[in-house]
Image (cartoon, rainbow, N blue to C red; front, side):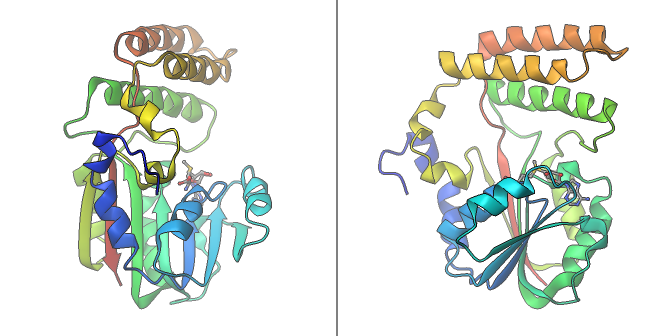
Length: 261
Ligand SMILES: C[S@@+](CC[C@H](N)C(=O)[O-])C[C@H]1O[C@@H](n2cnc3c(N)ncnc32)[C@H](O)[C@@H]1O
């Protein structure tokens, strides 16, 4: 963990989540909606121990990057739709989903699959941002920048949905029937505990952050520059850019949910 931790981070639930992860022997771990395996990096640093990781994603786009990044580690990346996993029942000791729930067209179907492939007694770990609760104006900006991205993805036919509320997340997982459920809500993610730039994130108004988010909004808009809805989205983007200038932007708060099959 980093030595020079910002106060907000050291007081956040990220510390408790890290402790909780440190009690879990991961065994064979499946990461659902893995992209390039960002959460696998976090789990390697925090789980008590593990045997292997399998990352699945419906899109091949980022998997190759993951394969390159983890080429010396026991990590296997497979292009697979999480709604129809080809794994056997009870195959994995741990199944996790990080920031992928709000990308799923059918959350219930995927969570039923998660339960099927998880061994009895195995661990489910969810990391997902949420839209409600006491979040700062800068965090609301981040949520709304994300929602612009959702609109653009939807116009392009890419499944992507608005961030869920804490209750919606709990309700989705509750349907699965996990036991020993434990929930943490944190304004910082566990990844920040290992980030040398964490101090910078205390200030959502810093110039490089404002430039970065402004460019992100522009890039998002460019993806639909020929679309009929462009003018309407441009208006929304301009108003978001004003908000970024006035409030800055900070990552939305995150829910961590742990449960057992
Ligand atoms: C925001 S990314 C996940 C980020 C990553 N897990 C992390 O924590 O760094 C969401 C991913 O979910 C994937 N996804 C969406 N629907 C899926 C499905 N039905 N099956 C598998 N992956 C899916 C998307 O392709 C995308 O890569």
